[in-house]
Length: 289
Image (cartoon, rainbow, N blue to C red; front, side, top):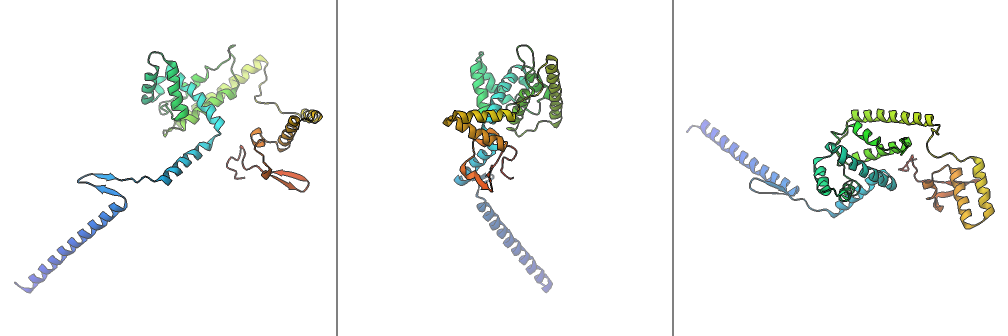
């Protein structure tokens, strides 16, 4: 055998040995990576071993609790109660917009006309579990608007616009429970319908000679002065409390919720006047300003 052939054979053997070494090295690295990720491999299947992390679960529960602070507890309760009635109406008059899994649950509960059982299941889904049984992909704005028109006084007069707008806010709160997104087009349709309803309500009030403005009337200074004088004249503990409360609320132009939470550590003197620091308020719930 000539020398060139020997050299070629040696090179081939060397290359083969290098390939085998690289293959084994790659397998070792792959095995280390699998062990690092906590994976257990069988013959042809891979099963992930997820270790329970108590600290992570506590943080997850805390994160969910913080996420609920998006709206006040009382507002959340009002929204959920309104949505229970709304879902009940959908079940009887527009069942096709509900998700099939919830239709099956509600059908089983209502079997034989048991409306009490039906309401209990709706309350569990909407208020307790805070899930959205509505298929928002198929849901139309006109369906909700039709539901709104069922709310009228006995004399066929509309309620105030805030009543209907509150139910819209409640519905959008429920839609936030699902990962599906309601069509922007349908949102615009509902917005236009709500504007039409608002104008219709104002028109009806003008025709009936009713007050067109909504909400509470502002307290005049004369009323404020008289109330303070009457509290000081009475002189009881209760009247002094009312006087203090009213004076704070009047001078701070603050809401009742903000006034009732004022504590001594929020009070400071600045020259000849008293300063009150609010950690948060309605327009700054995070306390950034």
